[in-house]
Image (spheres, rainbow, N blue to C red):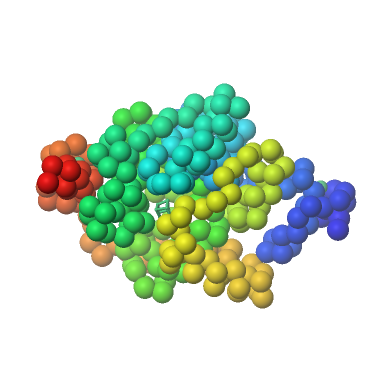
Length: 301
Ligand code: SF4
Ligand code: ZN
Ligand code: ZN
């Protein structure tokens, strides 16, 4: 198998892009796609500081690496959720990565901020783990980025993630979520701009990039991911992709062309939470502060 660009030995075949690539040209493609997404969606200006949410997995670590390679002022944020048998290893992978490269990694502990780990919170709040996790992670990432003066918060969502999210939103015809699914969401008040520079790169490309660049990442997924709906959606899309290459990329690119037609049902009015001062759509304390109240109440009970 020969590289479609230079004719040397190829290491990966990307059916969806009609390419076979050698290590050098796979790296070039990945970095070019990231730079292209940043330009197209006006994700970052050269002087802006960006905080990368890292999990120790391939996508977030590779994203951080690429942003630095491209010359951006990128630092990392790891949120220690306190998930037994997982968080310690994902934290270690993130710290080793940062240390080896001399990158700045900030670590925030959910237990310190909230008074409980994610496992403890799930028991107390009796909610679904992933939904609670999403709430606390979004809150802490934004709060840290806002207080630290970063202009953007970057996450490692890749093409497979975004196509699965899109399929989930379409199956429910959730207009509000569809309107908000975009590679770059502008900042507003204390809400920091959110960007997803890997949006057009597949999981396979990211795994190959890490291998070529010597990025050692945590292979295992969060134990709570197993029953998650997103895994089932990814499975369906993988089957379709096998039979009809480029299904995922055309699904996502096609959506981005028509996304303007979806409108959130009502504009959300944000106000400052009386507890922490961060923006909330709730009338009163934000969801994080309410959870915190529940934790301290539960702990006192
Ligand atoms: Fe959080 Fe669920 Fe993802 Fe685990 S799988 S990190 S619990 S959202
Ligand atoms: Zn080549
Ligand atoms: Zn609050």
